[in-house]
Image 1 (cartoon, rainbow, N blue to C red):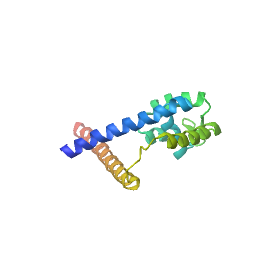
Image 2 (cartoon, helix red, strand yellow; image 1 turned 135 degrees about the horizontal axis):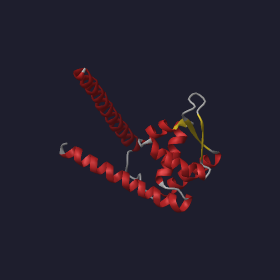
Image 3 (cartoon, one colour; image 1 turned 60 degrees about the vertical axis):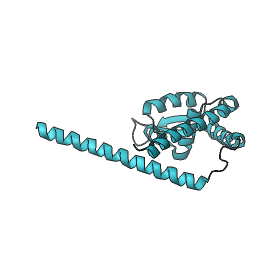
Image 4 (tube, rainbow, N blue to C red; image 1 turned 180 degrees about the vertical axis):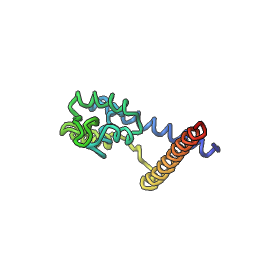
Length: 160
């Protein structure tokens, strides 16, 4: 990895960590939720009702991590889990009215409390750059997965 790439990785990590801390500093006292719970609510709203596996992909976490977050969200009445009508082994997750209300209040509060976090940023350009980076990373990971599957198949064929 060359120096600009290293700097990008470090800057992205630091920016993400700091933005998460800013959000957490507001969300915990104002709404009693963590930034990871908030992210789960945002994802469920964006793609839900959805299977837990789809939410895991949306958050880029394991299904076990989603299950842990859902226990808390369901117990607080912010999300509901129901059996999938198509696949009885799967569950569908949706926000409850209380979850939608919490999310709307949290978004408003975050917007009011960010204290200039977005100052001097060209948000459309940043969004475009991040979307491109995400697409490139996803394509790279898909390529690695395809290559790994091909190597597994060729290894089986060589042993046969």
